[in-house]
Length: 394
Image (cartoon, rainbow, N blue to C red):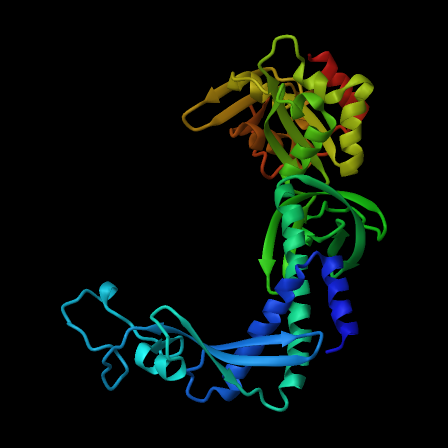
């Protein structure tokens, strides 16, 4: 191998932040394994190799540690008292050890614990093997270095939001360039109806980092409720600082979400903090999730009030709670019925997810309706009307 190739290896090591000595050590280990496979017929050689990449010289030797003289049986095991516990029995390994009597034949002053090296003649074609092995090792080390780089950079970013550029869209999978790594946004983690255009900037939640045969996979999500939660943390300082707390999120990605918030501080309005002046904060989040409608609900320890809040913007006339069954019968006027149910039952369905209670909407004439099969068009409130309703209810 010429000095030019040595320089190339050094350049690659510098670019990929790989220790040059790790490359040479790996080459020597790979060559030793190749020698044992092809030339160690008895499998009793502890082969060591030193491949000088500057001179193309290869030195091969057998390295053994000197041990005491043992008497062996026909199978090569040390003959000793059978009553000795297995963990205390002496083992002799002819590949890595040499008895003192045999070591003295090679080196007269050999002592127990010494290392005896016996030179081996490298085969005539070993130089070609060395060159091929070096190339394979370098490629492997580059892959390992890139893998380690991705792990070191993104492991601490797991369960957070990252911003990247859409690299390509293939078979309904979106590949996002995150800098030193590429994230994978699978179909189930995409927001339904959302368009992904190559070159566009995009925010995603890093839900997991997995190792596979292909390397490191950075799994992304935009449909995950944690994505919405972390958007709130990014845009609303009070949530990021822990002053306002997100109690729960009920989400149907691309359609509608309800977020329950509360605070332990009397001088803080949790809903108002999320909305911001003239809706600036909530609008920043809505701009990120597209057409998805967003309701901010004030959490209340009183389950009755919590359910009432979660059904907004509908006005509730009366409510009966069954805590044992975790059910609530909610009475509304006729003109509020479709609003409480929501389009295709979405409003009451999300309220149920948010509170953990099965909610039955009952009309004023006590006609109970199965909200799971409802298909009624509701009032299509705009985000401005939602903001106004939330502010008025504060």
